[in-house]
Amino acid sequence: MSETNEDQQSQKPGETPSPQHGDLTEELRGLGQQLEMAFRGVIESEQAKNLQRDLLAGLREIGNQMQSGLNSLKDDPRVQNLTERGQQVVNQAQESPPAREFQDVLARGAAFLKEQIAVFNESQSAGAPRATGGQSGTQTVTIEHHHDDVDEATGETTRLDPDAKG
Image (cartoon, rainbow, N blue to C red; front, side):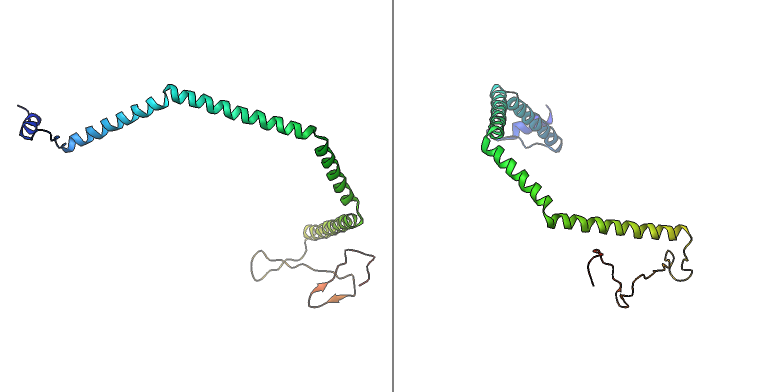
């Protein structure tokens, strides 16, 4: 007689045999296979397929209704009127004196920066003196002052609006 048969015979009726260490692995493997088969059965069942079809049909219907709603909004004269008024407000804001002044100030500031960077680049390519001592990578830059309104604490004041008196 085998060992498992002896174990089963020595047990009282109604008791299940206690699995051995090797049997535990087999039981867990079998449980995993049964769970996999159960999940596959649920997923591949007709109910699951019908549910998937119903869900896809519902999502398509929602998409169609949203598209229809957007098209009706686009064709609605009130929405078109609102869009036109919004565009007019944007155009008026862009053409307003403060907006034009702001654009002018930005343009002059950009031109000034471009000019200063060009001067700096020219001085670098002409071999402006570099610092020889101290930290590496430092350089000496000579700043020319064209105005008499230089404050020693803050340096030269550059006016963006040449017409402004300071």
